[in-house]
Length: 86
Image (cartoon, rainbow, N blue to C red; front, side, top):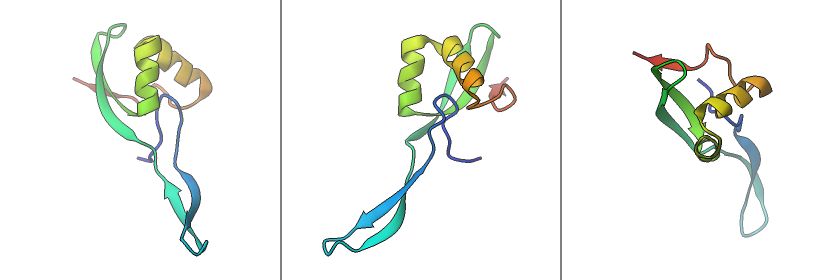
């Protein structure tokens, strides 16, 4: 599974390490990802999401259902990507 937030769609960026002598080498800026379980009230089940810190704040602000609907609409994840925990 790739390192992409399922709510916000954030993924790794590429940049440069810059030394004291201004020599540049390539590096990646990884996303701050978590595996988090939520109780999805509309489906009456537990789900597990891979989301960034910004995605977690978005769920706290809007609610799980609204954040998932927005992620589906923007194409960040599909209903098949979400892991349902029995």
